[in-house]
Amino acid sequence: MAVKAGDFLLVNFTLKVKESGETVDTTYDAVAKDTHLHRQDSTYGPRFIILGEGWLPKGLEDSLVGADIGKRTTVELPPDKGFGTRDPAKMRLVPLRRFRDKGIDPTPGAQIEFDGRPATVRAVGAGRVQVDYNHPLAGRTLIYDVSIEKIVEDDNEKILNIISKRIPEVDKAKFGVERTGKELTVEVPEEAFYLSGLQVAKKSVTSDLQKFFPDIDSISFREVFKRRAPEAEMEEASKAWAVETSKSAEQVETKPQTEKAQEAPAQPARKRRAPAKKPASKGPTKRAMMGSESQR
Image (cartoon, rainbow, N blue to C red; front, side):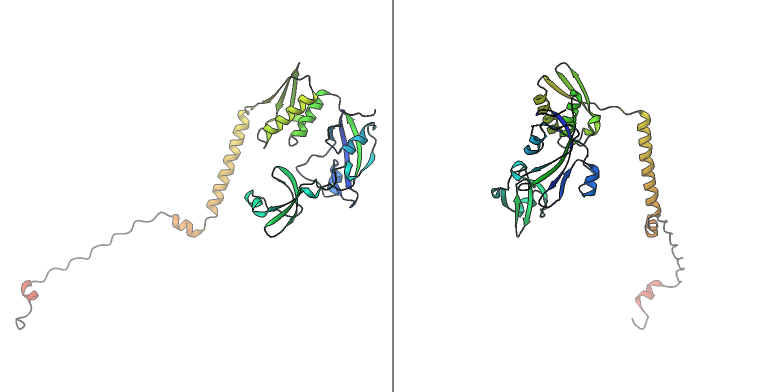
């Protein structure tokens, strides 16, 4: 079955730069590991696209129209059909202090977001940074080894894939989808509640769904905080108490002897017994104080 523009597809590919032979992107986990592209925070597997929406380079999407499912093909794209030619006007010299003010430590080759746009740091000099706003693959000839794995037909599967594109951090299978007539409710799993930028992502999901499902009038996101079972709460509290008790015991055992000595309660000082008073000598005290007769 040949694909056409507007189809919802799952696509596998590996992308290389012709000039250097370097592999720069892939959907295959094994290839990512072999080429040192693998990242723990990335999910590998067929990539979801809507053919013709520009989610892949236009030249590649054009080559997929009419392709057969499961057939691997190699597509070579010159710069003008890939990520464009390099534009010298997109190079900027930016004062280094502006990066420091934003808490950014620029290093050559780093991919950053600056002034709201993705950019590449090309060089760092005395007080200035050369920033390139061209796409990192602009001006390169691209070679795609690509195959279409599936045409997605089920509406719920389409919706879940759209959600996954905008919220890739959470497994799409954990989202719930409930559709009643022209109303759609998306149940958000608890692990997504505190993701940075979740509200922006939900807005993007809403825009995509309204575009590709014009028969849906309203979209709701349901976030349900479920009560934990008492047994689970008690077990968690017990583990926390055990950890704190263990830490306290370790602290007591490792205190130095001098500290223990300092912490020992002070013993009350013994009272010194007052020396016994000598009996006063008999005789005229007054005369002894006044001196001898000869002195007088």
